[in-house]
Image 1: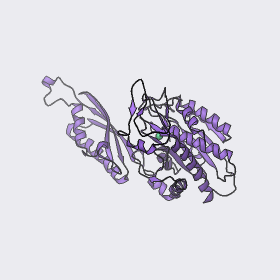
Image 2 (image 1 turned 30 degrees about the vertical axis):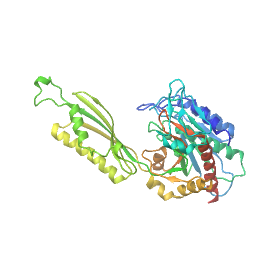
Image 3 (image 1 turned 90 degrees about the vertical axis):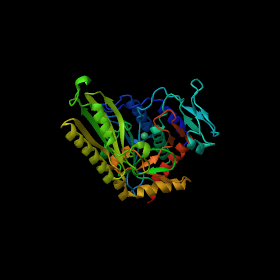
Image 4 (image 1 turned 120 degrees about the vertical axis):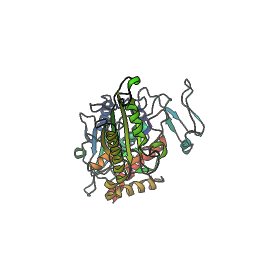
Length: 408
Ligand SMILES: [Zn+2]
């Protein structure tokens, strides 16, 4: 599996930045450029039923080479990169045999990345890293996953002596804008179970994620000349501030970690007449999640009683749920991944995700789908980097997982 780096570098050069709040799907047409490339590569490798649909999803299959009854296992990663940081004009830098010192990313801008600021860099001493030049993200999230799955596919297709069931491969657009599972063709994909390869450092396995909702608020104020406003003005901005004050002070992202949930005020804008606030609500625990939503609803209803019906309009919508309850009946998926890692001297680390994945939503669409590491760090920003040896190891882990399914 020698060419995973070339593969990765080829994919990150394709601009696949997705865009929030778009009607169209995929949110940006350019994501299909990578889709076409992957479709051609899969075809050249000898994969079967290779297709890209109108939405930009790429699907392929490696047929079973045994008559043994083995569940069809899928591997999924996403092609788009986050709109939080520029995703075009990427200049990857390869740091060979990292010495544990501050990395100079860009001679012109003087941008550096130091282990003081990012201590996990020290894990990679003696290994090879790929960083950005400090002006864009890298796209290891999730093109590292794409490169690992492609490398696994190539290995299986060139080693027919490895016994395996049907292997399904899926690459999705628009994961970063929360829509990667929207039009995923679970039935056409054909897998019984699957893994997303979209996590962080080598060894991570995840099957618990947040329950998630969005709360969009529109506050209708009443503006009157401030000189004669007594008893009549309703300042939408002040009502918004009052709303925030009624939410639990410590239940926000800056004060929580692990299994603690939160209300996160993502943005706020407005004037006296109209104010807008967008929150996201998160909790691993379904009951606490429902309580948080109920609290938001009752705060709004209190404000409407106080300031008049219709003053605060709330649009509360669930985004995704914790996949734990969908994975637990298929706990062997986690055991297989753990054993595959251990057989390659990688210590598995099972941890809850403080976010969501395509796999969480796919799990609720009937495809149990935990998440595996892809090998990168500092996603969605200029300090994103990936370790080459981690990517190589993860491709090996995927092959081991495939073997384990056949040996069960
Ligand atoms: Zn990702």
